[in-house]
Image 1 (cartoon, rainbow, N blue to C red):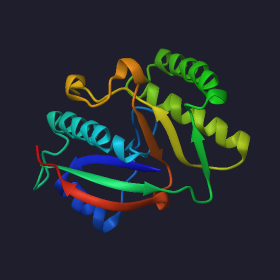
Image 2 (cartoon, rainbow, N blue to C red; image 1 turned 90 degrees about the horizontal axis):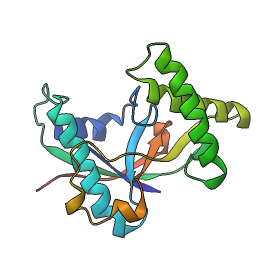
Image 3 (spheres, helix red, strand yellow; image 1 turned 180 degrees about the horizontal axis):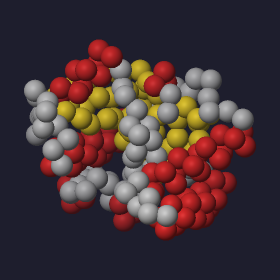
Image 4 (cartoon, one colour; image 1 turned 120 degrees about the vertical axis):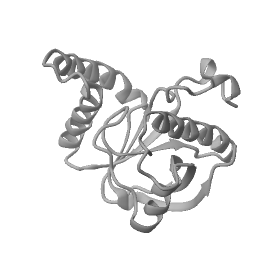
Length: 186
């Protein structure tokens, strides 16, 4: 499995030295997010999504304290170690995931946990699967919405045909091998 992570150059340089830091919330739960690019043909697409994510974060002042807020793209290889690979897009899990995440989300939302309800709902569903399988997840594969501000008209992929883009959410950073880190040049 391969993926691309977009961030500012200051963070990218730190990641190269000390490794990735897991986020506590995300579009589909906590973890380290990578836009899937298992085939080389998908690299341009994954890079466009990673750049859009960086732009969204920059717009929200995520990099305001950074020395170099310019965009960098980190390409990685992902390998499952001792844990599980959970594919939430697999036919046998997709329907179950939709129902469970929706039910959990609604319960959290009604209890005024609105801000991070969807992220927590995914986390609780993954935890439920981990309990059933008696093992921790190393990597979760899931379709997520495009970053706010993503320009689909310039994308090499048509979402109307393919559906939502795929992300790998890494729960165990030992699964990550950095292949390259480059500054994005528009």
